[in-house]
Image (tube, rainbow, N blue to C red; front, side, top):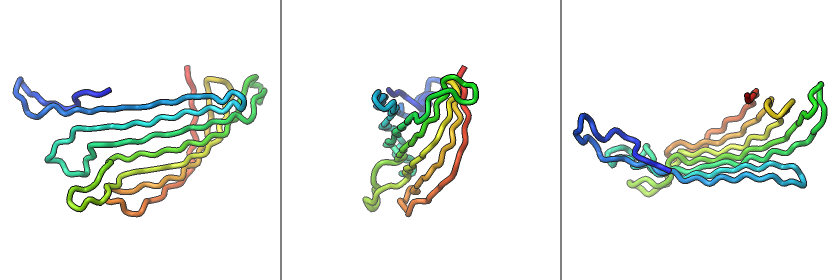
Length: 161
């Protein structure tokens, strides 16, 4: 999918070239029925027509994706909920916001991130989830300096209606 993303005309006067954005994505969903394991994955490639006058800080190619693996470990009545489920999960993520090399010295442009996020979740019913995540993340700046590490916990509540 894609299209023109910029304002290229004003009052009928052309003020810029039409700038295109193109996105190609692959999605994958599967359940390993014997184990009940859910696997969800996505990988996306993005191409952006960035004006030549912009610095290389504005990436014209990007890619990234994730893999989620969710394993139910308990399925039974819990605290009055008939079909409650406790899941163990892990999410792997990677994104490169600026794929390529600097024109001046042919060194790799950084600006990327990867993370691993194990989690435990409780679903009292199919429409509600309580989830505790731990994230370990490494992120490099545009100059590909040594990655900064971020770690932490997050707790989320989701309901669907």
